[in-house]
Image 1: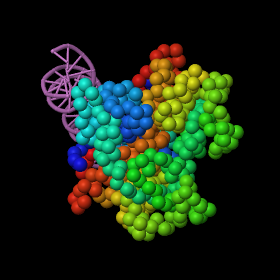
Image 2: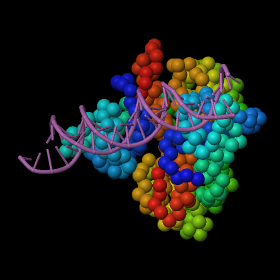
Image 3: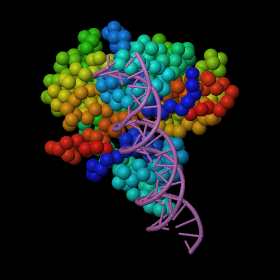
Image 4: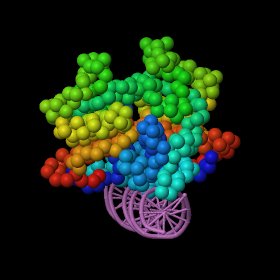
Length: 219
Length: 219
DNA sequence: TAGATTGTTAATCGATTAACAATC
DNA sequence: TAGATTGTTAATCGATTAACAATC
């Protein structure tokens, strides 16, 4: 596998390609063109070709790509075949949803424990995953050699939890709190925000409300 | 309110600023500089200034911005003060999490009903919101003049649901399915993907595994 | 073969960062 | 005042789209 830099937008599109390919396979389709994939997903065909090229997959002129090959290329490129363990901190509404999110399993990631500060949740299970006291996080992570930490707590609590994760030897943090996490350079942090997406929607709606009878404007 | 085009990344950062400002206000802080905000959130200070300028907020040299003013500017810019109703289709794991997500209420959006194809869920409530048969979606949307439709179903089911929403007069769709939704030009579609973020993390981890003892690489 | 499709190189577009003048 | 901070203009960087040669 090459470690060549890949545009972040490319990485973000790969799961959409992957899920489309799964659907095509299910329908029995063997070959697919970049144009077809782009059409279904709303991505320019040139863009699709570039993205797929990054994964190392090769197509054949006039024929397209083998669905099976593309699935394998994406899996390998994202290292989804590698079994990886994770813990999640913050068993609230979003956290619980992630515990049941099949996209995590698809990426080869298994959440082996959840942690929460609320004693009422300790010992209970969410989607079959036990909830433990947050004090046990560091020890648990170290002993079980956990690779990924998922943070779904309010922003103020996120930095100390990240620190405990790092102490516990965690290699990567999937952060849902809107705050910068200060970690050593070899620890990966990927921050996600549902609110970000909602803000884009809010703004588009605000503009639409301003322009009642005309066409929608950009921005 | 201006309808000038605004960079999408700017819109996506606004909620993070907003939540930080809420925390600062709670701590009793009255003024804040772009540098401070950028420091906490990991955003370049020039970027913060540009983003805030889009909302129409003005700061004072040597003093900074009033926390209260920034909160008001962002609320107005995103039209969060406007009461808006929404429905959600797909009361699974992610859908249920969204029903309990406080960020939606903060944006002035109230989810008034959820819809699901599973009869076992009909008449039940999730986070206090009733789950109804999917057949009632269009009529409900029209009668209640619902503005936003949230789609949290598998990709194959998303297009017909989007069509029903459009028929029901919905103005904007928040789409969590990895598929393009074909809607009239005056209907807003904003597509979000949790898997996208996980793919970025997967790739970084894959590269880290390839370079065991050296520094992390890009891409 | 002809033509569809791939894959790559060049051009355009958009966002971020740097530089700097304005100002409290 | 001096210096910190704002806000804007210019330069850089990165991603997308267009053009086109290669090829099955």
